[in-house]
Length: 69
Figure 1 (cartoon, one colour):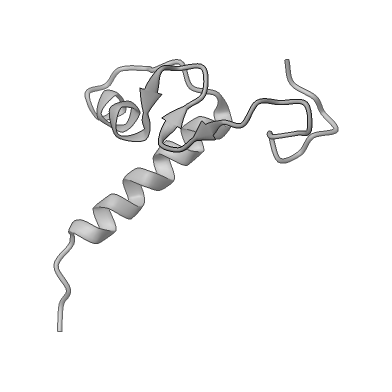
Figure 2: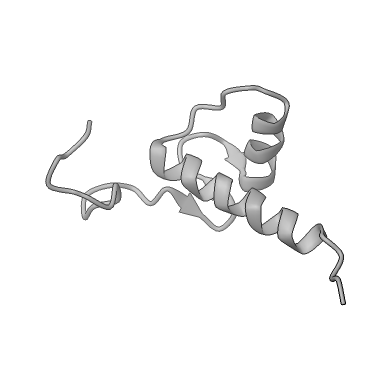
């Protein structure tokens, strides 16, 4: 259920979207969810979890790029 008064997407009574590296309620780790998205799958992520996975992918890609001098 979406609460229009909760602009961040994570509010007091909600379970956290991520515990350690596990996305709450999905049974997937960040890496597993990222791999599923890269394969074109649609894992059962909330909007907040999707943003977390997208950010994780972006950071992973940045780390994989060689530094140019």
